Length: 363
Image (spheres, rainbow, N blue to C red):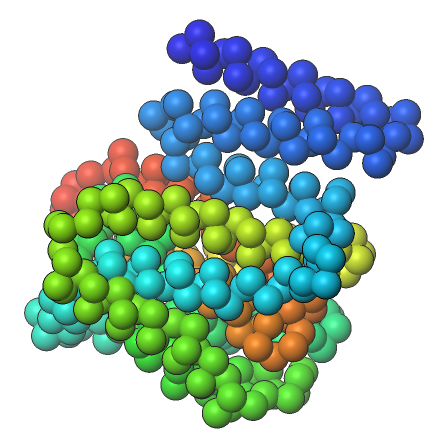
């Protein structure tokens, strides 16, 4: 408790110093204090049982702040373009995702056909339609708008599985939906992008399909095979992969943020609002869409989280492969941290709501 108060106090002091320096016009010198504010706040959250789930998202905000104030090291070091790290990092993350899965995860399609079908339909209809609608209403430039559609056309990621566990939802259904949606991504994401984003930017359907296969499908299959033969035999890898994945996600977001810094300074606030609306609408429509199909409370929570949370890393990799990471890649970089914050908040809210009690009340 004392450590928490100390860390929180230090973070508050850093924030106050940052604000004072902004008021004094010393913007360039204020950056380190904002980064330290997020760092100490993340450490505070990490030690708190209720807010532990927010620590990584808070740390991401610190990483974004660092790349906004000091973009050059995240754009290029010597002759090396940092964006070249995005695809290898994403492949490592997807391999890690594969090692956390098993072939039994796909059996859920047979055991829970209704939940899987409803979840997939909601995932690949609600979010791309919302992305296109929001991008059009906000009047974003063509490539920024395409990025909003892209994040909506991407499958869910492993974060939704963690949130489903915290929310007392159907974890088995969540894992199956993530696995199946990810495997369908090479077909569904290019199709949705061609339909909804084709008017914004040229879409190379087959090129995008191959990009997803090499960035996601092949590493996941590699992870699945590795897990099948070496499950329980490499405890060091089980501990290392989550850390590597989080570090990889942070670095990907920092590289994209640095590359699109100028655009973010002009439209960043609008992108944040778009992220909040897109994400909240996904949760709402995913949940109540399941209610229309008379699914139980646990399944409704699961599908709400699966629909509302997308794989920002995959969207970032696709943006890079399109050669537009500084524009198309901005929405995934902004939406990603927010989805972790909102997903954690919703999961913590549901954790205190007994799904069986709600089920009886609905009846």
